[in-house]
Image (cartoon, rainbow, N blue to C red; front, top):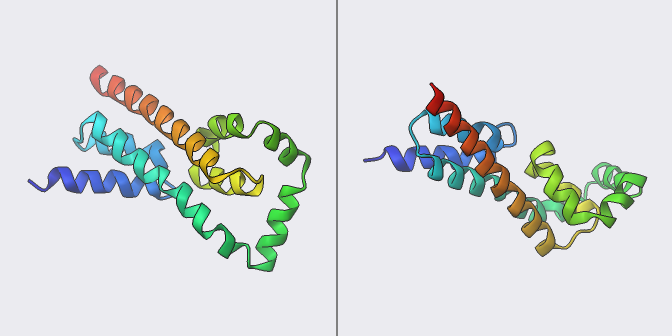
Length: 143
């Protein structure tokens, strides 16, 4: 009776934690018996939660001088200018590579709007979550 909520909560929390994200959350929870759709859904929701979390707490982190100087240095780089030109495309491609936490910070550093950052990262998270889920299911079916 409590198996589904416990496994869903595990997928959600693992998706949120930067070390796991959905790279491990989906395969682990599917291996523990959570169905593929639920594993993808809960892991992606947990992973997506990092983006609003970064948006909300970015300004508080920016109050620290060493952090603010570091982010300003990144914002002034030539890569930052290139990322500003192709913001949404960069977020779509970078999210699976560097993770949602880093993408949230990078999106704020390059001055991307909240809505654009949320939509771009959300689309990317759910797209590669579905891909990871499908590949995991394919691997489980082969066993």
